[in-house]
Amino acid sequence: MSLSCPLCSNTYICHYHGDSRRDYWQCQTCQLVYVERSQHLAPAEEKAVYDRHENSPEDVRYRRFLSRLFTPLNERLVPGAQGLDFGCGPGPTLSVMFEEAGHPMALYDVYYAPDRQVLEGSYDFITASEVIEHLAEPGLVLTQLADRLAPGGWLGLMTKRVQVREDFARWHYILDPTHISFFSEATFEWLAAHLGMQVEFPDTDVALLYKPLLAP
Image (cartoon, rainbow, N blue to C red):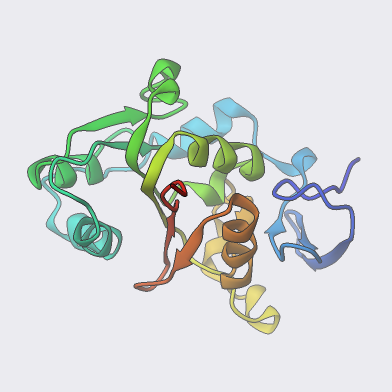
């Protein structure tokens, strides 16, 4: 099996944690913690987990949860900014919140909104809430999303972050079998530098990456 990092492709990898279900590896370059592909769920098994999600725009608690990403990102957008909600899931809600704020939204989800034509557009902002921890190839996907951003655009990501190694074994986030990529603040800082972007951490579990305007 190949243990090259799925974010930065580096092969300087160390075993981070193991349990009865799977092993977790950490890249020593970008600090991503990840599960090797041979221990991922099959697509049908993965979708079966997602099908049990019951998120809805009518759920006030879910809206409150999403507001941790929505509020700081919305504050940074110009009126009428056009966005893409990547990994919108079976009950798109974040996109509804942005549309209510006057921002037209496109949707993409590999299972529930699989129109890849939307991935060829250009956007002022792209959101991925509780998505990147599911990515088998985060380096490829995040680079593609950054490429779809117009200069001056924002990439808004929400995922729980790896903190200290001693707490990882007790972390509820690793109990979900569809969670396979785990980011830390250091990982986001590496990612921003790699993409030529700037990163901010405005709220718990939220990272906002800014694509600078082109130089005159």
